[in-house]
Amino acid sequence: MKRVLRVMLVVVTLPALVAGAQRSSAPDPPMPEPAATFSILGYDPATGEVGGAVQSRVFSVGNGVLTAEAGLGVVATQAIVDVSYGPKGIALLRAGLEPDAIIKAIWDSDPDPNPDNWTKQGRQFAVINGQGKTAVFTGPKATEWAGHLQGKYCTAQGNILAGEPVVHGMIKAFESTTGHLSARLTAALEAGQAAGGDKRGMQSAAILIVGKGQGVWLNNDTVLRLQVDDSPEPIQELRRLVDGWNERRAKGQQRAVK
Image (spheres, rainbow, N blue to C red):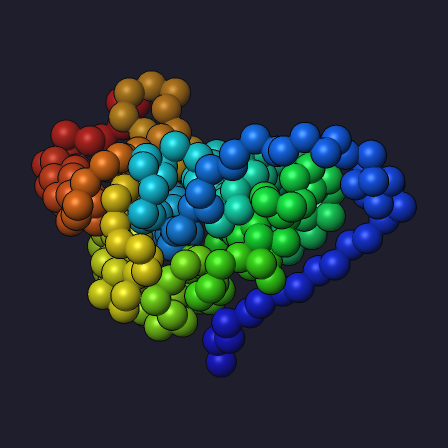
């Protein structure tokens, strides 16, 4: 039985209290909007490829949500975003940590530098490793609806969504779709949108897939990297690009040089 999990962690330390007391009374600089986002991370055991796809009502969501390294895994960071979570997650995968330990280590070490209007309690991030193991965290202050669901070789997560059916639909689509990992990830985004998606609408989408030596040309681990930065139908445009790439791939035009 799959379950949607919400994890609440509260960490209070004396240094944090002292730092709060010493903060200047000057107003904080304006912060960006939370990345109202839904994403899917997935693994293909037949090829060893691992990747992620994301859609959001923000401009160029692919510019910061997904971080990947072939043979290690993918990290997605969204909601009250700290972009450093991506590289930190990859570094901990490289060090041999399991995804659940990575989630805990990163969140526990977050100094929460702007708790008043960019709190770590609103972070959402997920990790999938090079064997398809997953872990995910949704902070208690991530804007509703926010949550996640893990499946076989995949995890779906989102915030400011129409509701829980969004992540359920994404997992079902990923697990039931056949074909290349790119098609499965895109199908998950389509299912999430069909279930209501981001409550604020659509604007951008992205997909990133990596595999050791599986990219085009020499010494390239990037199987596929696509971004739709600003579109009224970003998932539809992403689907067009993914389908075109798979057609060329079927003809051998996307085969890595050996």
